[in-house]
Length: 286
Image (tube, rainbow, N blue to C red; front, side, top):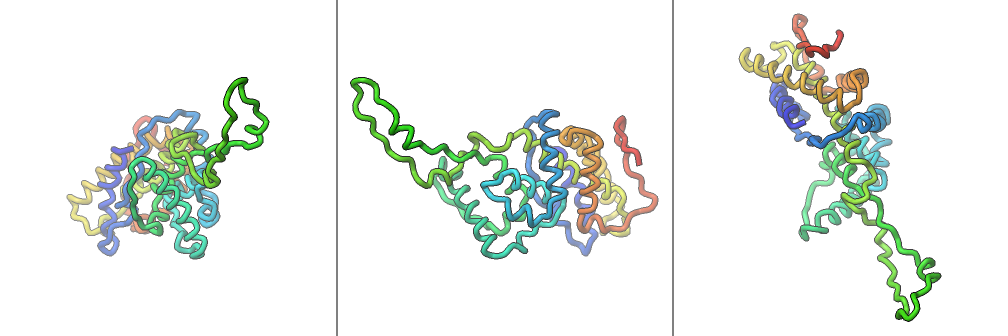
């Protein structure tokens, strides 16, 4: 995905036309999904992409906690597909509770190995797809609790000293094995995330090829360079997206959804004479 993201960021210069302000989505750092995934992973990932497109955002956010990594993933993909974050609409008490859960989890993850603390803006992170997707991918299942009943019934080996039992930490079930015994399969997360990101990039770069130069503040040379970068990203997102989404038809379905969530770029005037670049042997039928 790295080459695709770079091309998308280059082409994002075309949105400088709207009141001289770049669209925020063009500036954010995308999640890297260079890890491999199979066709089976791509098909399984559709469950999360479907939910990201159809479930009300507030319904997702209210359940997007460390107990539900699959919903955290869905909310992250929804943000990647251009759906607006609704964290600011969440009641203060609910939002604070959500942030406390993440704070405990990140403390566990970071201090577990590095032994240092960090501070961060939890409110801002709730609006970042990378935050949700990264945590969803790395959440492990709660550690198993020791059973007092099982130990009480066990018999010590002949001649062995009496068995001593120390109960485990009562708060242990609140901890999560990050990167161990994961709830979600990493490659399925990779496929679902790449599907959403590629579809959004495809829709965005298709629109960038249609924008009328008069709607921008770019010189003809800058406009031509931006369009060239858009064509490159458009083709890259097609090739990677079809694989990540599991099929051509499903990728186009997701890209069509994303095309309605392009923000300022989506509202820009089209050039009636503009022609979208073809996709070679896998050309999309208009």
